[in-house]
Image 1 (cartoon, rainbow, N blue to C red):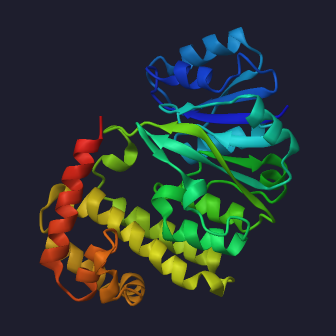
Image 2 (image 1 turned 120 degrees about the vertical axis):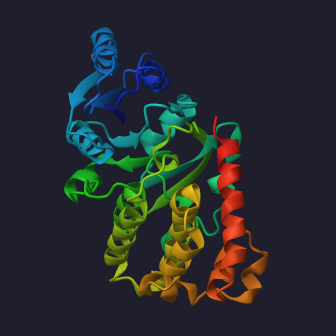
Length: 324
């Protein structure tokens, strides 16, 4: 078997069949699809089992609630050379002869592909400097987590995952993708980027990160501290980790603090005073004022919290417009 596609499935009756079919499992006998139902209460289970009856390479499994639990169950059952992850409301693209031949012959430990977000193309291959330099790649990923540090859109060596016991931490609710990916990539000897667009991410208002969660900041902090522990032995990534922290801070602002807007500036100021944030803000300087993603952080560093809040409010509005 060449490729195991792992799909966590929770209350996704409207999209799960399309997701399964997008893998190419009906066209290629070298693909197995492991669909893990993790507590669905709609018709998801019935639909998966119907597809599994049509094709022996579609495997139905169950896990406890939580995406991490589902992905870990999928890893346990994976039997192919490569593993990739697919969310139930997204699709795989272009599993053609060229991609099949690449997976057969590739000696790298990780293959990173381009992807689409709704109708927008994200070309990781063209935006990545020194693609053959593992340290440089990890730094760029840490500094651009929203683009790079998704678990999907990549192919992982099954043997490496299993032999090194790399699993998703089910105690993490947010950024579990980033944390898993960091631990995996630190084990990689070689990484390959391909120009192929193989993943279609559907940006939706129903996405977990777009729903208000009063615990979101606490959950992000847990993930940040776990990534820090993962990188403790690698001082070469210290600056990049601080940028990663600030990018997560931006997400906290947009997906929590300024979503409800009650006492938002006060919460912003309080977070900036936390040690792990204040230490990260030290790397920001006035020259970053013309970099859009760093601009509010410049304001935060120099205690211009009202200016920062205006930007975060505008980003909340823009995010709401971008969801379908």
